[in-house]
Length: 211
Image 1 (spheres, rainbow, N blue to C red):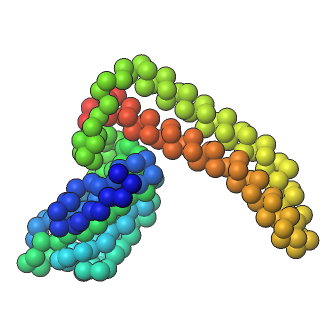
Image 2: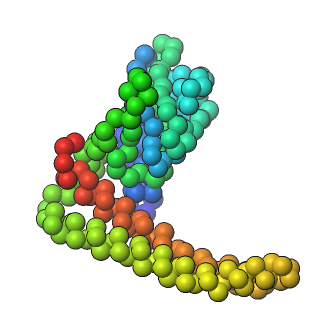
Image 3: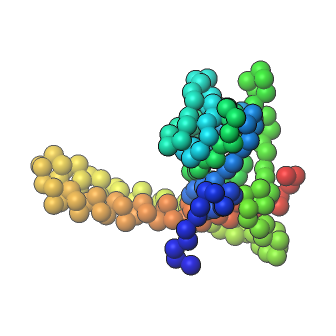
């Protein structure tokens, strides 16, 4: 279905999970919260829809209510707790969503070992039909594809970047736009291949050890 409408009053779950983004509606009862953690790669957006919560992000404390949002950037330690007598419902998204998604820390500020989660933790089925050897071979091939795309992008920039510098120096916006497009046409393949790599990694990680 091309258009799916989600409602925070009924769809209290992960609604979109890809390597680029995980988004969900979450409901917590008064006093409930989550352990402090950070994300190695992801920015996390919190948009409160009903109720109120106290957020601690990178040591700063703030209260967030309906219609308000806050953001925990990459590597910022964050936690929250529902305050008041009402449940709190919020929308949250993490971009990108690549395992291990959460980094936990000791009270002394020491990083704990990586924690990989099952796909079911994000309301997705784990691929148990594809043999692990096949998945690992695909992961290796995808990694090489990223490398090859990056090499091609670097080669394309050798000429295009110099042309872009010259065009900008001459204030020739038509030539600059052409060079910019040439750089992007090469770079976009790096991003596409990286997304394919991340998707495969998220299939491999839950099956490659303890969760």
